[in-house]
Amino acid sequence: MVSALFAQKRKKDDFLFRLLSKYPEHFSHILKNEGQYRVQIIYTQINRDKNRKPQFTNYNFNVKDTLYFYPASTVKLPVAILALQKLNELKIPGLDKYTTMITGSAGGRLTEVHNDPSAPDGRPTIAHYIKKILLVSDNDAYNRLYEFLGQEYINKTLHRMGFKEVSITHRLEVSLSDEENRTANPVYFYDTAGKLIYEKPAEKIKLTIPSKNIKLGKGFMKDGVLIHQPFDFSAKNRISLSSLHQIVKSILFPEFVEKEKRFLLTEEDYAFLRKYMSMMPFESRSPAYDPEVFWDTYVKFLFYGSEKNASLPYLRIFNKVGEAYGFLIDAAYFADFKNGVEFFLSAVIHCNEDGIYNDNQYDYDTVGFPFLKHLGRVIYDYELKRKKAHRPDLSVFQMNYSD
Image (cartoon, rainbow, N blue to C red; front, side, top):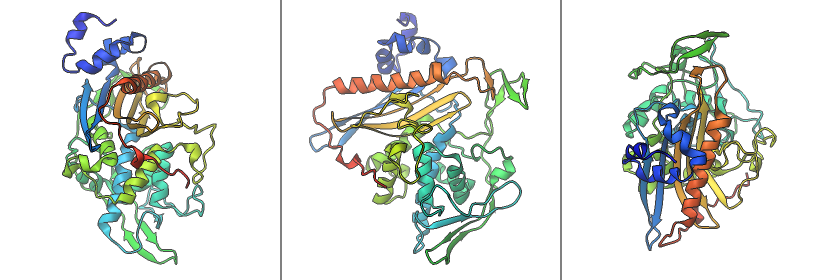
């Protein structure tokens, strides 16, 4: 078990620390070395009153907004949400998430898109991009929404909503300069008759986002050569676990978050996001995914880890994950319709024991995925046994998963 001396240091995070300490075979090493693993956990317990109104209680472990982690694909969630919000703000007749969206090029290495082979009719649309983001964490889909919104709109909007530490300043998977990431391609929307109904011109962003001095590890690979210097994350995307947790909560329970942290969405928007946050890749016909590549629990790190076993049919996880540079992140809402269990759980862990980045030698399979799997299952098991005064009505979260 974890030493009594170490336990005394965990007063602030006592509940989660005590709970995880009951399972030393899964958590002892990580609890003793939380600095190395940069672990953060937020667990939100939900209790319903006699009118089934939810009350939320947060339990934190080592949560610090200043403790940097590379957010990887988790930044796709706020960008997907903001794409829907932007459409609602524009209020242009005939313009919605199903409208054909053609991306031009602002030049250089910035690419254009005229069709989407994964769509049944080949048309790129915001709806289809969001589906791909939430179903399998598609990078190109995120990049296209990033271009539609632009760096300035994304960051200013999130900062205005109170997510002050967020910095989303670059595309994913493609290596571009700061200037290229500040440049957004032109985007054109056409109606079913091929008539242009809205044009978002190319733009060069002049927004200044305060830089952070964030350097981690002891080395990194560049062009096949090991550079013996800490890896610089200063100009990379940032978002805190608290903000991710709050954003997921705002999609599931918008009326129970502060007004400033609510997105400008319709009820149909909320239902759309919930559906694809909880849908399994095999349930999608458009896009259609190879189950050998995208298994049913492909992006459900909490509770399933990297396992490819069949998911529980009565349990739905509404979430967004991230995986890059040795960081694994998952921010989720759990709904068990059979047992009447619900809770929020978000976590991040750093799996890079050798301290070298860009070498593809990360400890995902031996440390990260098992940790997230066991964390999700321990909290779920605790919730199954926890007595509740009133069983929740989760019917609002039961989706029709036919496309």
